[in-house]
Length: 343
Image (cartoon, rainbow, N blue to C red; front, side, top):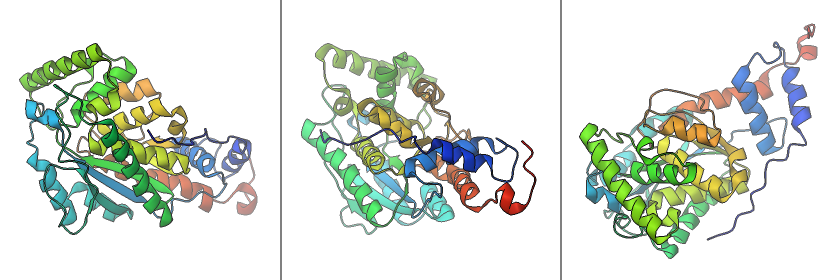
């Protein structure tokens, strides 16, 4: 696998950042979580004047062989249908990108459909979906490495345009299944507590999903495979690559819902310091998301009950993060405002 140079954020500026925050014309600590976000972003960027310039959103698409086992209420053709819908501007991700000024890149990493001639979709297809991990590894080591590199290259393209903040979303029917398994393997949470309704499974459907995933995990454990390539989707591994490259380059990384949190968990397993660059934007409605965040020591900004994916939760949270940066750059301090400092 590609090597990354990801260092913990340099905290030598922490006292100076805190002094600036405390001298803004407000009661000490009165902007709560915004002050915590401001501190994190200033440390990431090593500045007292942070910037969220040229925000970019990667929407990564891929299909999953495990879908063939009936673990999702949605059929796999929804993946390519939604990918095309995104090019017409009709998805939730499109609306939020327009609202908050993100440049959207729609990327086919492994959709089981020929999207190569469709304007607005970046063709980085590795294969037409992963293999069925109930019976065999989802991808080869070479495919895994290629997916990581695709994520890196996409981030390099964003950085070349001046990007300082990155959000990532996904489109891939059945990708809650590998996410649940990664959560189980990396946090030790019982598998049944990691599995939810996905796109809308009923109780018998959830039970069937558990039975299939449990069989897959038992076969995996018996053979000693590597969990990222054995279970992951192409879009998920590309997201891990993007997160690691973004952390290496000191970007602010906005982590979306259950699936992207699982990818963040995987990235942190590889490079623990990557967490310093991540903002966990919301806790979704998928069973297990709160448990996974808790296991990672992460505190979500929003609790909106979302489970759409696509990166929509990260985009919804952006105005809060923007407010933290504006606080640092636009509020007066006590001296300039000619207000008595009363603490």
